[in-house]
Length: 257
Length: 224
Image 1 (cartoon, each protein chain N blue to C red):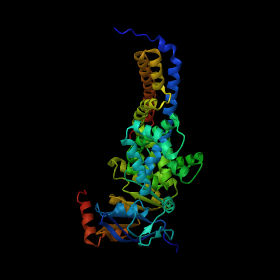
Image 2: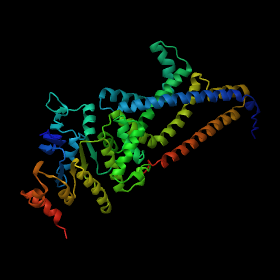
Image 3: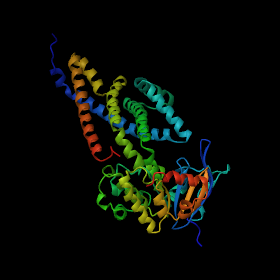
Image 4: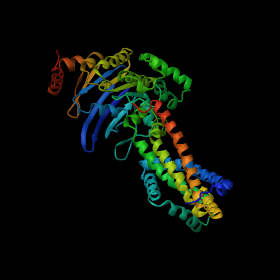
């Protein structure tokens, strides 16, 4: 068996003495789709942001393709050089809740930017690749618009195309539909579902529990500063074993009809 | 009733034009140098390394809090004594106004850079950009558009402040005007013409700037 694409060993993070989580172990293999659920403040987004070191973990290790990122300091904490982080982040793509498109660039240039600047690909080739990624998310005809002219759902699809263009091994989705009008959620979830069907590896933080159930291969439920319950969607979402998971799901189903 | 007579002034207008030319040369030099110094000072001040941020902060504060005339005298009369270098009026003036406007530009750059949303920095980082790539490609292009009005304001201020160089005998517009006023005994006319030259050229520059700003606004930056 090949080694996991991503491994988190004993990851811990606190902000100014307030602990978000400790001792998180997680193994992600190629093709895994892991949905991270939990109450707000349970550290879902922080955990995701530690994976590509947008937040620096206080302790613990991140290993990509079996190689630990960063080097040990005398204090025991890991130190990450800029070069290591740039390499890591090319392997780990990310999509944000707030899209964060570059407003001063056209849609095609948003997608091509990383190819040109980070990968050093010539601009005409980069544009070709950008347009084909835009086709994948159904927005090729918007290539020369500026982001301000797009709807929220379209912006998020462009953001997904931007992440895909870098050929990441893993995609991180940080509440990708939470900033959208309910009517626009569907188009973004369809794109993510399509990526799932292609067998892409992804970590998804979401409040769309129904979507997590259908799409994930595994659920990670965070509570009490750690992984509280994990397993297949059927195990965790249909037959939760522990009280906080049960409580969380009950709260979410209160207004079902 | 004062009897206006512009004829003596106009017949010597070559003198004023030569002065105006020198004013433009000095302003352009200080502006170019000041923008470069300002960007470097801003980046240094924003650095996490105290070895960079502290000296940058000191330079900025010293030049923002002392009168430009004092700085000019210091560079013109003081520096040659300390360093035993030859100092020309132009060199002293160019140095003073480059660093002085650099200090002000630094604060404008800094404000513009920190005004860019956190999400933009993160979006650039997660596609693997280095700090200098993200500054050059993502942050500065957006920041410069936001800074542009303050930059223009400061540049106009700079052009007017350069009149101080007349005190160290650099032959700028005001210096030549002083000469001409003594020669013709027509100070009222001379300074009226000088004021008009500043008024017209700065109004013209402001007009160009406003048009440029309009172009920026159209290129999709202003809304998110």
